[in-house]
Amino acid sequence: MELIKEERLMLKGKEGEGVQKAMEILIALAEIYGAERMIKIKSAQLAGVSYKNLGDAGLEFLSEWAEKGARVKVPTTLNPAGMDLENWEKLGIPREFAEKQLMVVKVYEKMGVKPTCTCTPYLVGNLPGFGDHIAWSESSAVCYANSVIGARTNREGGPSALAAAITGRTPLYGYHLDENRKGKFLIEVECKLGKISDFGALGYLVGKKIGNSVPYFEGIEKADSDQLKALGAAMAASGAVALFHIPGITPEAKLHNMVSESAKTIVIDSLEEAYKELNSQAKEIDFVAIGCPHASLAEIEQVSDLLKGKKVKASLWVTTSSEVRESAKRKGLLAEIEKSGAEIVADTCMIVAPIKDLGFKNMATNAGKAAFYAPAHCGVSVRFGSLDKCIEAALTGRW
Ligand code: F3S
Image (cartoon, rainbow, N blue to C red; front, side, top):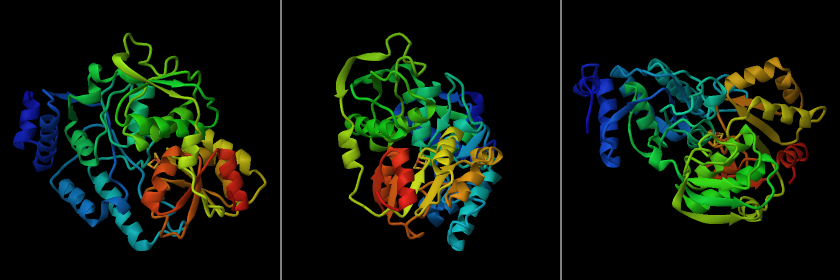
């Protein structure tokens, strides 16, 4: 593989052991994927933040890297952590877990990472431009960045995204190259899409059918940013989709020849199968989770409207970044939501927080991705439906 002088010096350890180790990781990756050279990146986004997933071994691995002098060279943000970094006590997070989680975030901060813990970094300042090369690792954010923004990233793992942040480089392969960005499946959507949950349901079906391929949709006439993030998140979860195109909506769909000649066609004429497969038979609901991917201000506003003057029976979390919660506070939405007994929980989410330890058994959500992951990752039964239905469940404790 061809390295420029600066990269060769990094590899030789001229910038310290931490940078050398990062370059070694990237070169190993380049060899696996046949990349011929490195490219500079504009930003990074790191998974591997929740102590629930990292454990002591992960914390130790990161601490050692930081001790070796590793510091990020590009703006870098974090994925959701295992708890609200400010209000963890109020949520009942065990102290021992909290202390370890705060240590993880501290180690990242030592490396120069901004402690913004969110899967929607593009809503709070980590916003790449069209064509920018980046190294992101949260799968829903990868899908959004590639598809809706037109930036270029592979689905990085936590260590490879961190290595890219530390060197400011990533190997040139995969979705960084034009030839891999064409639609390989033509998805003809012949059913109506309205609510965010419909986009999650569609994403679930498509991801399941095409795995890690690139879908080019026909038949979706409009979709807002929240619906697109739900669609991408679900496809990235049930499959490993990292890029999709929708003519008239996503920026690369209009480029010449964006559907590969050998593309196969799949028709989706009903979402029933998804709603059926993502729903358990649970009748009692003790936990409602909205905000997967992390909620935008518009989504928080909808929740606040639905809760006005009412009291919840089940616990209701709206998960988002601390920056968006701050904006919600300024608009009076936080006070309105808290008046109902619900919470806006920042920095974490229903999947990476230890919600089983908090005693929750049956969760309702409007997110296809959360509905897909929660049974296996959190050990809860799931009900999946529209936002209205989820809020109704929070108010009555029933589905
Ligand atoms: Fe984000 Fe957690 Fe969903 S990381 S995409 S809210 S599973």
